[in-house]
Amino acid sequence: MYKYHTLNPIASVGLKEFGDKFVACEEYKDADCVLVRSAKMHDLEIPKNLLAVARAGAGVNNIPLDELAKKGIVVFNTPGANANGVKELVLAGMFYASRGIVEGINWLNTEGLNDPDVAKSAESQKKNYAGTELSGKKLGVIGLGAIGVKVANAATNLGMEVYGYDPYISVDAAWHLSRSIKHVLKAEEIYANCDYITIHVPLLDSTRHMINAEAIKLMKDTAILLNFARDELVDEESVVAALKVGKLRKYVSDFPNSTVVGKEGCIVTPHLGASTEESEDNCAVMAVKELKDYMENGNIRNSVNLPNITMGRPESVSRIQIFHNNVANVLTSLTSAFGNAGINIATMNSKSKGERAVSLFDLDSPAPDEVLKRIEDAKEIIRVRIVQ
Image (cartoon, rainbow, N blue to C red; front, side):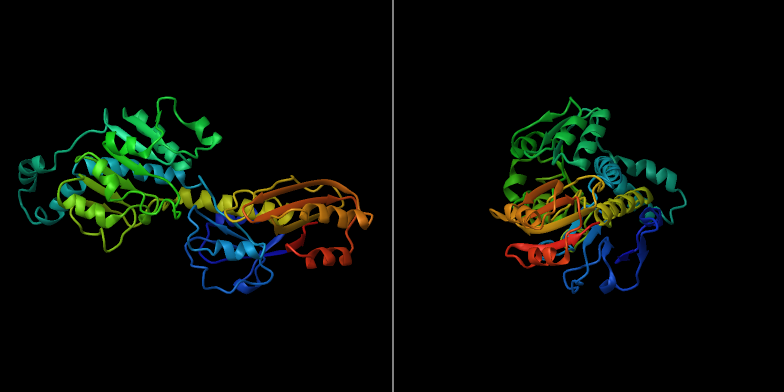
């Protein structure tokens, strides 16, 4: 029986996927696996028996990835599970930034609130909120992952001319991308040509403030910049400064902070991107399925801190999972350890990612405790786990 703990409320439709081999536990310290959304885990003590963490969402800044990797604890996320919810909000952002919708509503809720002839007043005021249409305009999508592809494809259906930039686009994303998308090789092409620019890349050291003063200088004065990925991808002080002098038309963000909230030209929503019932359900279901497959079978899919590795369901007598440093001769020593003990390896698989590696062994007979203990105590071994 596996114990799971939820650090945040998780949709019940997801938790039902666990089945009868899993039971909820009240204390984090007792958990074999954990589900989390936004709870900060950096200051939490890592339980000795913890095997896996699943983030019901895409961002993992609240999780100590490397510290967990060093202990052989897998961290999963759920890429694409909330993509449609974010896509729809990005489209909404383009609409309300283009048409003066927010400004018009704000005027009605203030100046028009006590106006007995508000309809007549609105007719005279609406010229102040005249906007532009999306059809025929150029949209630049930076990052063609699960969300970026959906935004790009939807925009083409609105009659927009779409430019896409992603030097690391996956094969799967490429298959789902509309043929009409113009794939550019440099982000600068998007900055210089597009009326709308939306960013959908992960926050890394290499992407922090990738939209900065230099990038803004290349943009059209009428450009609308949208950020529904991470606030730190954009140098927001430079954006506010550009808006003041008319260098940008609007900045639309889903990340409220003191730099942009209430500033002229900034339209900010309270982090609503994945806040739909459907997204929360999808993320919960996907996170639980990842944990379940890992705990029961040792398969790792959508890990953000350790290599992905799969071998289906165990078909032999025993399955052993070994986490180790990605250095020469470790795999040889592991196969020798089983061979010297007279244990035949029916099937094996090994994958690496950076400094770490994971190996799965299906054995024709159970490995004695003393063999597993010798492996566990060997240099470069991080964790040994009996899956079955």
